[in-house]
Image (tube, rainbow, N blue to C red; front, side, top):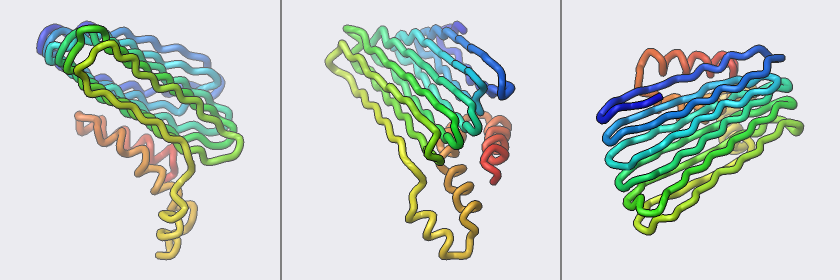
Length: 216
């Protein structure tokens, strides 16, 4: 995918693979100055699944949003891998990935942002946050920032845990069944990624997809 100067693209990937399927999706994106590329990957996994995106970022006023959400159950597997290379001054990247795993599923997040020497005034933010809803589910996360420039604003965060027990207790105290409360809290957790989708109709479809998967 090559974006010309000033071009704007929003790409949504619904990865609806069969439970026994094996799939690899590999995308390479090249941005020109002042271009804007936004991507959201939504997946419920497969027996083996890898969705990889590599972005050549020129800086020069170009903007990148690179998001994802994985909702896994059974023995599904999903690997979301991204590599962003900031090659020039004045570029921005905002990346948010959220995941939910249950049963014996396994989620993998590998995110790397490289800020090359001389790519000053880069603003790059990466976040990965996941919920583990059963003892046998697994999350492997590897967020990386490689910075070779001095004047930058870069940060990354990674959290893996369970649902907030205080929020569950609060909901149950007000008469909400435990399973309904769990589903709503999980949907709200993933909803932060979905809310960043710019296209309204697609955003609504993504919310419906998450609701179906989470039984909301």
